[in-house]
Length: 339
Image (cartoon, rainbow, N blue to C red; front, side, top):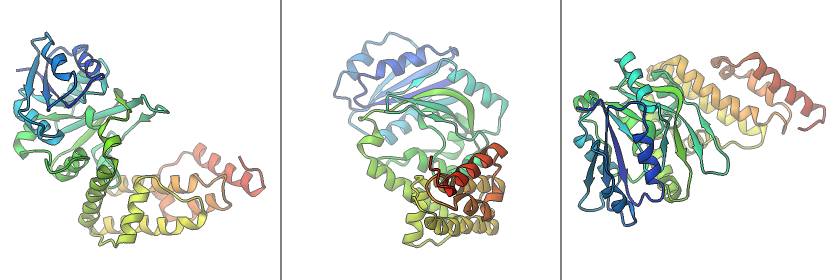
């Protein structure tokens, strides 16, 4: 039995599939199997897969197109490793990825699902995704968005078996976010704080092709959590929450009041329900408040004062340098020196 089974579903994965497969073959950890699931590819993916010569690669061909969620559930059933890792056909794993995640699991037996940091490439501007490491912080952030890079996720196989964990096959997109939230009361999460995944940005990926549907599912997941938190939100409040989750803020100090009121309502609801760790939720809420105010530092007068006067400011852990830069930019604006 291999230490880790890597599940790689593919539907029309060329020309990126070879680089994804090669990145698994180049892993420093040699104790793995790669479960390649061809989900009705109509490009050259099938011929590429059939030509692979590596006894650590197991190939499964779906009889018809099943979709990503069903293919992943099939992968869970086919995998034989102690751990089960995700991999996408268009991403690239760094050579230490599997080794680092296995080591993390063995040092943290309480963790059931573990992701990693990621760097994007192929888009107009490369980004670094530094997501929280601790379980409490990950869960608090999940109120706004998924903070586990799906292609970097590794599962403890015993947790999948014990909980009967499965992706929702009725969902066309955001299946990972829905899965994390469905099981968040029963498992503990972590992220290895290292850049172990390279996440490719391109026009053919799921988020680009069905972005509207992905956004719709993400909104449903967020609204479920608001309800679990004890908040009966109306349509206007839900829309505001989704805008905050997307970092979609207006360019006016007057727009900050409803954001502050809403974020404080979340904090108060959590005080009553203890649904999230209080400190972790406070950090997540303050991060949104900081960004909403900070982006106005050199655009409108009063942004710094508005941030500082709120109770939310006390929930975060801003450094003195961050605060001084914010205050200085606001002061320069007040003196008519726009940046």
